Image 1: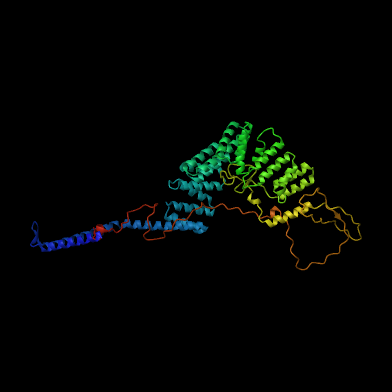
Image 2: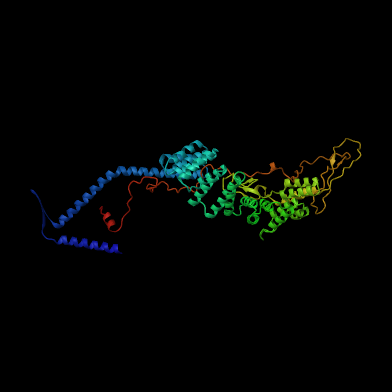
Length: 578
């Protein structure tokens, strides 16, 4: 509204000025030497306006001619940049859907049109990775590592190439260089931390962990847990070399991570040796309530030196009873009681706690039953039968990390280098794919084990060609008899009379029956995930397309500043060429 009022005021003033000029009487005389011009004031004002318009027109023509080469260069540069950005965008998209030839073609176009664009270098490197040209990819990544704006990305690419070439030392050196440039780099700190843990450099690993906390890569609870893991690993390594440092480390570790099983076991051992029995028991109980583990039960049983086997059994029963209400009758507690009962020669108690698990035993249950049969009755036959069941039984929980199963706890995963990756759980590969096959196999095995040994029968030979001996079938097992046989005897051999030849089968014979058990080689192995050919990209940059008036980019030199149509007073005068 104010602009409209101001514009109307200007028109009124211009009209008033024109009327005033038209009303002025007299003539206007210009004299220069012998040159004399006489005219009226309105005519002079009109000629002055024409002269000003002519000057503005001539100035515009001259400036246009003067600026034409620069505008042409800028126009060519903008078109070239637009073509380069178009090639980069579609090249990254081609890499995303795995078109090697198209990616290479766009990479060449991007290198021609935008040689200094960081994304053009990235496209070139990734297209080389997709083609399997490792030398070319490393060359481009080295060029990126020498630039200030792409140095970290180039180091990341060189790190991946070093990993593909199994050059662990080179990969760690590159990661350490990246940490110097950017302490908040997650991949670099992860790589250096895993390498120092694998090398046993626990002081260096703790320094990296402190740096991660300062950079904000991990929060305070995760830092406390990971620091406890590293201190526990150092204590386990120094247990036999420097017990003072090991004790100091594990005591700090148990404060930071009281539920960490190895730290609790080692701390309880040190406290027991110092005759701090109650403190040792509290440490084990705290870890046991969070994660029942056989090592904790073993440490709790031997927390007081010099106790008898029956006293250790009572202590383990007390520990098993401390499991919270949401884990009643936990299998680890029952197995710990069975183990202590066998050591105390309380075989009836051991059979009692193992009774709920003998129908579908795990390997540890079957081995404990074999030990009971051997120790109580000296029955090697039943012991061998239970050992046979242990071979085909389900796996017990183990220290597992990223599909890798270890016989002991480790601070980092050997597969991914992830810290605190090992968990006490059943390995995924041992889980049954279907319950039907497992139940059928278990019933068949129990029937074979529970069958009484057949007797040897001799039949008088008859005339005719001799036939090979035929094994007599075993009788059906007794109902609800899950006990193994008393001894392993040979099957009975019967010499039968000549058998008439069977009639020839029909043209289409029925298919063979599927075996109950399959060998491990027949089982399908899970396919491993392939290593990605290129660095993962979150998303491809937006495609601006090829436009005559391409927008400016942060990586291109801006020549001139585009002017927008101004409004108000400036807009009014801009329309008159001012």
